[in-house]
Image (tube, rainbow, N blue to C red; front, side, top):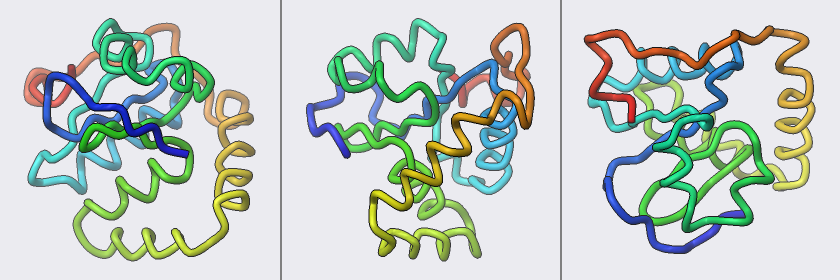
Length: 140
């Protein structure tokens, strides 16, 4: 499900992630390492930046609770967000985006299963990720 209300502010593609989730933080590192053009910006869901970016998409955005992407004025979440991200990474990762042919219900069921167990499998931190100085411009 995508919400197609206009995005105000930054025109970059923004990945919103759970800043205290180790899996989500690992995913951010994965994306940064495979995004040499710096297409993606990042914001922890717990940040004021994320709250402001998600304001036009309420109440839908509060029900997701993990990875979301805002691109071109649309909010993408769950498997749609993951596949959108993969599509824009350097090769071979765009090939994963071919899984868009799988029924949405199956893709999101897998996503929900991993999201439900992410803290018990990967752990969590006590505070949100802090950007290193060399990556500060990538985080909102």
